[in-house]
Length: 367
Image 1 (cartoon, one colour):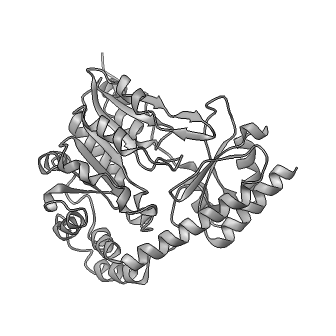
Image 2: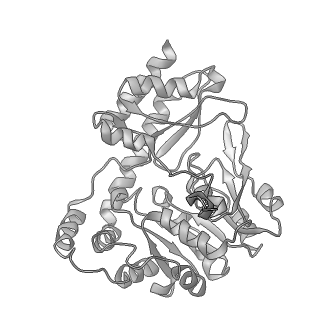
């Protein structure tokens, strides 16, 4: 009997579907909507970066090299030996794809702290792995990391532990002592530092790489550097580990334009400082403006977004998101958890967008 095409599919691929960012598709379809949902930087690339983009666009007929120049720069910035401590990716999403391909076999487990960035689950399941979610602790109007819970979730099948620092969507940091506890397990420990620049590299844990070969730090230029559309991410790790991960990458996975634009952005310290100062000032203004709404829980953030729980105020997050969209603002929500269905998140936008967001939220709560 002739087989159906579905019979040839890898078993663990069968239940999966293509990842679709409906909110981003909506934003491109309706440019009038305010994009306050995807943790994008509202400031466009600097003139320095745009000049570099134009220069290397004229060389787009040539294949890129292996990024030795930008990798060496990144290694030096992070006090690592050299380019072989760095692996480049098409955004940090591809970095996680490469890491997971390196360590996971079907049936292996990845432990994540939740709520968190969805890419870990996506890349785990596409390889037939099992995602183990350890919830953060909701206490005293804060969402706290649970390192003890992560350690207790370890089994013989655990191949990776991944922790975002600061976390998306909560915006807070895990204590250094807890990262050391996790590193001492010997299990590959991925520390996602996508938003580290908003608080400064002093909060980074790259120093652990020199002591623990199992520690891998990932970063992206999509956030503070404002290059989400150019897709540039990287990992930092022990040379031996990084080069094994590099064996999984697709040749020429990062284009010439992206690499040289990233190098320019990394060297523009003033540009980064200006963006960070802008973000942190606007984030503080949003929190202050909404802090007096009765029952609205605002989570302290060190990133470019703020998470809210409107459940204690008797409001549903989905109702707030729907109301905001009628006012031309796209926000992000989350499924009910911790006994509340009041979750929503805003990304820091332009000054005008931030002021409008505050007005809309105040209007909703005054109804």
